[in-house]
Image (cartoon, rainbow, N blue to C red; front, side, top):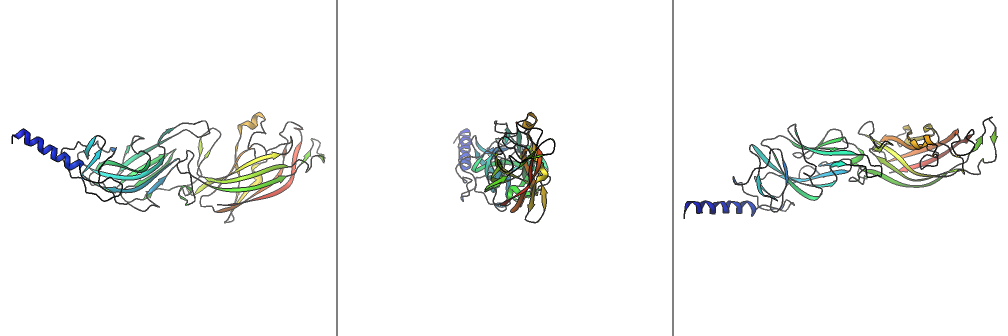
Length: 373
């Protein structure tokens, strides 16, 4: 056989060996692809998607620890392998010179990359992911880790690397997951890893929600500018507060659409979904001291509030303005299971359309809301 014919035949045999064996990367045992000097190298510290036949992966860590839950994004590490060659959409590939391939199988849900306000009050955030090899960071393209179930990518990393990790940044919340040990590092937000959390891939992030169906009545009297109490409306047009849900979240969206974070990873925010009716045309916004939460450990926490800008233009009738004066929230332990919210309605000046010089006096009426998560 002529030399050039023999060389071509050997090349065909080598390519067949690369593409014809291996596994699908879905965890099913298959043969491992053979090394080949003919496969083009990947870029250093790069990540590429794989297709077709690739080696099976082995689970790393545990399902409880080998995952990252961020704001609107969740990554679950299913397994890894260290083949010499992988099959990509552009053909077989080997690691860059002086590097090795780490095959990674995972589930990912949500979104990485820049997110813009859709008009529904979602803050603008830039989410990203970086490959960290023994402390050296390489920021990846937002499409490098496509979302979906049972995805597989090949990473070219330094040979002999002690640790390879993904650093996931979602809206300023940075977490790291080792692809070698399957463990997270740093202080993780406790709320995002609760077993009863849901909506991990929602734009606003995960939350714990419970239904509350309670109707609260707050009768009041009007006190005129001369200090005299008007007996006419007293008890005849009570302010009604319908409480529908209680929510635990790791972030809150402020009126300027910036995110507010709790003071530490072991904290979260509790809010109520409410509807205020009644009161006829008499309306006011009570001070935050009138809203107190007590945890199941006995800790008393006073409410805080995002003052609604609409109040400055006199729009007390807008949702959340009447009675509450804006969005009321409490910073609570992130592992909270139950709490008691007590509203002690005091008095404040009339903010409705009539009798603006008067004061609404709720006679320190006390109502209690029980919360169970």
